[in-house]
Length: 171
Image 1: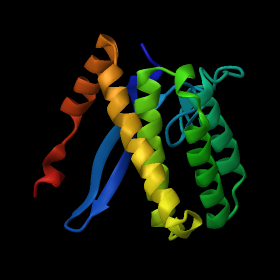
Image 2: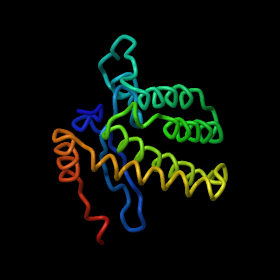
Image 3: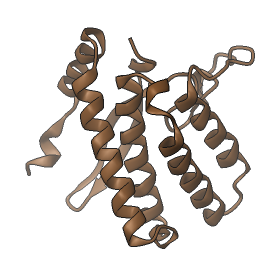
């Protein structure tokens, strides 16, 4: 079983023309992967954080480093620099040191960080050829991750997909 927390999702609202505030959930990862998820808990949790949780693997370490950089970011440009550093850290993780679930999550997180750069108008931080390479590698990581999941993680993916309201995709 990977460190994907299938039953501990974060929630975001997607805004699409004609579909404002569409809630979507996605799993967290390890102790640090996911928006507003750090040290093994959500930042708005009423429960105190576990004492000094450690990253579960190299991918979780990248998320911990991103949490620190994001916490220190005082401007949109600094946040974009933190997001770019996370993309680079995910790509630097040795595939032999993580399992299929981590590869899947890392690929998805990479695409999410690219989207964040785009939302802030900072895609120019990545030359077009680098952006294509990053997106291609992320998509490959997602595919290889899905193909290599063990039965428990495959069940987690299926449960997560079943819980999604995909109506906004088809309207």
